Image: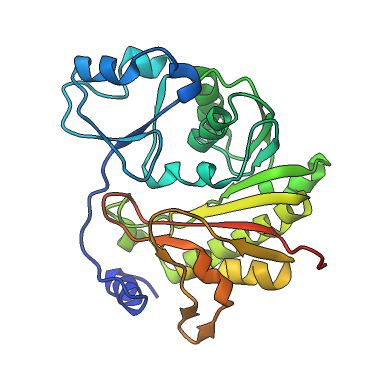
Amino acid sequence: MSGKEFFVNRYREFGWEFRPVYARQAIRINQTNSKGKNLLERLRTAGADLMKVPFLESGYWVGKSKVSVGATVEYLLGLYSIQEAAAQIPATLFSTLKNKLVLDACAAPGGKTVHLADLMDNRGAIVALDINSRRLIALKNHLERCHVRSAVVYALDARKASSLNLEFDRILLDVPCSGNFASDPQWFSRRTLKDVERNAKVQREIIAESTKCLADEGEIVYSTCSLEPEEDELNIDWAVKNLNLQTESINTPGENGLTQVFEHRLDSSISLCRRIWPGETQGFFVCKLKKRVGKQ
């Protein structure tokens, strides 16, 4: 099962009517690096057209600018990162980060790793994992450019994270996913339901492995840029029912997570997840999880 009509009909059943969208470019200011640097003034003087993203503390939309935001001195100095607006949400959902031991289980190319380090003010430690050698190079370059001193990078499959023999206070699972049409014009011709189901299986394996590494009072943030419930709500429903996890309320844009997916009635707590349909941002799904207190 594949093709545009197949997926568009699914979205309609979930309450969203398909329309072509053009996600806007965005940047995120690295607050740790840019203190006292008058960054916004410098960028606007150079010809950058920037507008605050209302739901992000450090995010700005990029308009029709006279300068490429990926070719400024300020970018090369790590004062800001180019990062899709919805992708700036996950790292902000942890209750606290400073002085914590954090696992970024699927870290490359490093945008969210840098964001975590920035929110931590380079205090604490981040263990960043990925298995793709080329993406690991991009990750290390990103960390170096942005002066991240609190991260260590491992070439390791997230499905083997427990082999590190560490217990993490915070775990970010921005898992490999099927993506969506807003970031790939050829998406409908590239993807099938079998792709989605295969990705969902890997994602469940990553969630299960990461839960083994989670401290008792720890937090997991799970996110994808997939619109498919197999990779989103159905995975979290499975985690809630099988891994002694519970969803937590989060304050972020989007709609409540689906609790009815075709013939499947999901746990009511899945409504606490957030589903962001494509518009000014790419499509996105995010939720926060903790261990159930007093239950094994």
